[in-house]
Structure formats: C-alpha cells, structure tokens
Image (tube, one colour):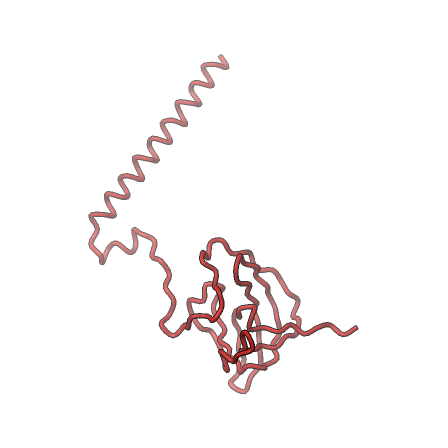
Length: 155
C-alpha cells in the first residue's frame, strides 16, 4: 500500500511538472506571437529610470532583487552632504522613490538637517529614508548612504 501511494505521489509530481513546463512553453510561444502593443500586459516590463535621474559618483547596487528589507531607524538626526571623496558632487542632494532610484521625489540643499526614518542595507550601496522641512516645503525620499552624515549621539 505504501509503495503504491509513493508511486502515485511520484506520478502526480511528474504530471504537474510536465504540465507546468508545457504551460511555460505555451506562454512563451503565445508571447512571441503578440504584437508590441499587446506584449506589455503578458510580459513583465522592466522598470526604467526617469531621464532626469543622474548617475551616481560611486558604485550602485547592480541587482535590486538582492537588496535588503528596510528597517525602522527611529527618527535619528542627520545632515545630507553632497560631497564625495572630498569633492562637491551634488550641491542639491536628490531624494528618490526607492533604492532603485527610478524617480526623484524631492531635493534638499547640501547641509540640510533631516530626520532618518528607515534604513535599508544593500550589497553595495545602503540607503536611508529621510524627511526634511525646507523653505520649499516638506521633502522626503531615499538618499544614498554616502550623501548622509549621521549625527553622533552626545555622551
């Protein structure tokens, strides 16, 4: 009885695997016959950065799927700093929608005090979610770690 149950389970897995493979092949062949106008709903579109998002002067994360999960930072005080390697590279530090930097959500002058709410560790480049009250109104978004100077707690 146990042996026949095991064979049944093996056959069921084999049938499912074959069916999934056939379904994947069918989906691929269906996608190949779609026109460009209809291909987008069937095939996942790759997110692209807005044209106004600049390159960074330091290494970025190569694969957004390898990035960490944001964790609360507790509203710590910090200062944005548009310098890298001792050189001013962003007099106005840009804030982004996420660690992928697809869209700019705000900007603050270098030297602006901010509140840090979230931290996201990543393989190459960490990010912080910050908020600031500026003359241009409230600003918020993700800033790359090299552009942020965390305030040291007083002893």
